[in-house]
Image 1: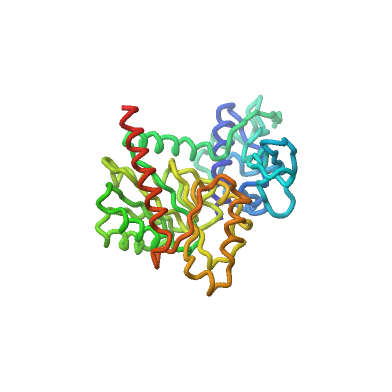
Image 2: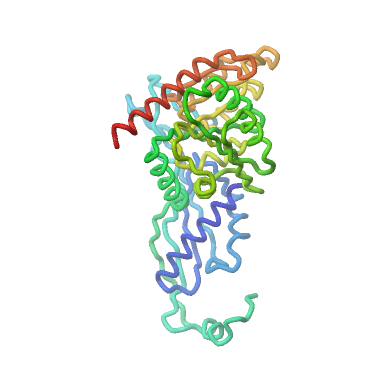
Length: 134
Length: 229
């Protein structure tokens, strides 16, 4: 269940970026996730929902774009998308295949609410900083 | 409440923080001229027994130490210490893999100065450790024949990232009804570049080829470090 560690990293990176921009909350985190990683999208969504509590991402949606694995032969340059089992030897000529995509685990962007005027909620928070969050 | 949705480009690898710590670990090891091996496998493939046999073959030839990773207990560290080798146990609690920060913290408590070889035995797991660089030079994956011939196909990321694959327990091939050649072909399918050894750490069969290779790797690393000083 390393998806928890991954979810925590995602939230930390998004949080740092949002704070740099003085954003009030994060609405969307866009992630590119390759199929040749060990990360299971459903498990990552589940972990994200647990890990986001008490952060700027508490209401955020994790938008996962799945990137298929594409391999290319280093010799004959034929590109294929492995289906089923992974074989990194070219079916056409027997030389090794290189991985072009499928190893992505990258945050592309975040969408934030940046309050141009201070929002009523954040004013409220400033007045009562110790008020627990619901 | 006037809030304006705004898109901010991030373009950051999720494992960035781990990779930065791994790079710092790697620099630390390079400065010491230490060869660091990340030893990974499924639970029960025989990592610790293999490590014991490797240590017995190479003890006295160079200076080595071991960092053990397990969810619970320091049983593995005790086994290594019983051979007279320094060993440090990381217990991860519930975490299914070691990460670079855990290793960095271990290094603070367990200095690795004046070492030729540091072995980091990862948590037994063929999935999660594949994603977390520790700062090692060598990624070694152990697969026992008793696990069946399909392991490399089922866990391709782990096998793809290995520099060395050790096929262990070949003395059990017949009893397990496993064709070792089929297992070897499956390793090569997912990793055409891996260096592969077939061996049994129990009977000693095939161990010499592996320990000679490792000894050569340690010597090469040490001489490369001398040149760069």
